[in-house]
Amino acid sequence: MFDDDYLHFYADILGAQRSDLDAELVARVLSLSSGMRVLDVPCGEGRIAGRLAARGCEVVGVDATEQFVALARAQYPSVAFHHGDIRSLPYESEFDAVVNWFTSFGYFDPDTNDRVLEGFARVLRPGGQLLIELHNPWRLMRLLEAGGGTSASVATVRDGLMADRLTYDEATRRSRTERFIVRDGQLRRLEFVLEQVPGPQLARRLRHAGFATVRLLGDNGSPLHRDSRRLLAVAQKSDGPAPQPPRVSLCEVDAGNVGVVCDLKVAPGQEAYIAPSAVTLAQAQFYPNAWVRAIYADDEPVGLLALLVDTDTPRYFLVRLMIGAQYQARGFGRAALELLVEHVRTLPGASELETSCVPGPGSPIGFYRALGFEETGRVEEGETVLRLPL
Image (cartoon, rainbow, N blue to C red):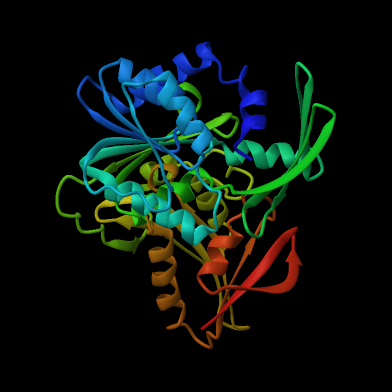
């Protein structure tokens, strides 16, 4: 898909003005300064790499399309451009920053995509930063849902037409684009698939790949929200030994921590799937069999869970598990659920733990499936019921 047709239809979209703004944003978000060594991958025809070099950075550009590399070398001779594969970068701990711009991540299967992230971490020096810029999957999924599961766009440039039809597979979190191109009286059709990774999941995968901290930003570096058109992930490689992960525990909610627990908010786009902590605590007052616990990471409240206990049936139902937005993608939800399972196994007649999820593009059902929950085929109050055998 990255060929002369791509250059033809994206020439105006990615023109000088847009490229100037993009390079300025990259430099600002990464706090780039003269002399810093930067890897731009994939670099395309060099529009970002060339502008960062003009700011005094020492830039290397890598792209898999030889035509793009040739154009980049002709336009920006001060930059070292190389033909190469993003999956096998031949560098080791030598860059201060890596730039992956304009939805250039996610073109492979999930395992390969994770290896790409690991490669980004490997080429960075300790303390170096990675910047990934993507479509915001939350917004994309909502637009597709509003369009009945599909979206279409048409671009006309001089003598040519490009039409895209996009669909989304919720089970695999991958979008599929059918592209039709008409140029010089010829019709060409191609298809490509992208893994659409929401911000919190991307942050988790970046940490697993070797990054110590991850910041999620929206358009132009502003705070990320569900209607942001773009998602920026800024990940920093540790500059020392990896810190010990916080110890997760379940604690009672009392007068000393109720305010902090109620202040926890879910990430943008998750509001339809997880109720606020204050609502959970209020509802629990009307259920004498509710077992409610704050989720702590070391000494800091990071979330809340609520279990309905029926020892007569017996039935044990997880009605709420929420982790505050700023604490997501750090394994706290998984650890809390493991502690809950240990607790439920001590209760009379416990043979399974149930829960339910609101279906939709941002549903946590994938989280529960990954932890061994299986769908029961039942739907209660519009929610899909799952069970975990104990």
